[in-house]
Amino acid sequence: VQLQASGGGLVQAGGSLRLSCAASGRTFSTYAMGWFRQAPGKERDFVAGISSTGGTKGYADSVKGRFTISRDNARNTVYLQMDKLKPEDTAVYYCASARRSTPYSATWYNRVNDYDYWGRGTLVTVSS
Image 1 (cartoon, rainbow, N blue to C red):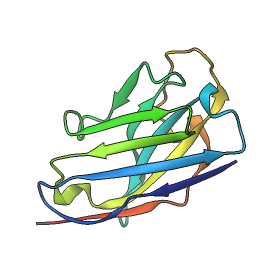
Image 2: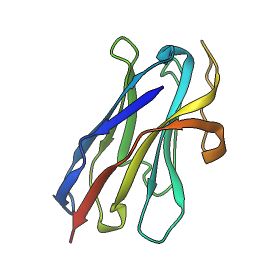
Image 3: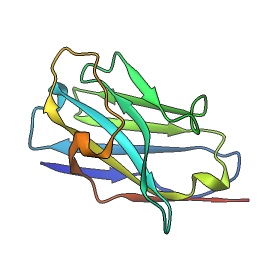
Image 4: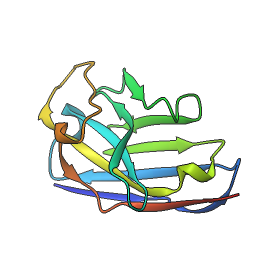
């Protein structure tokens, strides 16, 4: 399984970025997906999760109302639209594929241990 994240970069506070994560190697549409982030010296934290169908989603409180997770199962891709970015959003962002197949399910996950495949990460830097 390979996950390739892209779309990171440098943006001013208040700006927007859209991250993409292309998946291959397993039946994408049967697995929940998630985005996590890790700032220097800190643990990897949950950002957003989405069910296999895309019908249900969950967010960390710190990004709720500013970030939107979505997926296109025909393109095997998950997205993270980030608006109203803040300097504290600066981190390496990782996409991940859930450990268990949950087709036609509303389940999404917010724990690192619920995911078994991870992309390499893409750096997002928000300047003040």
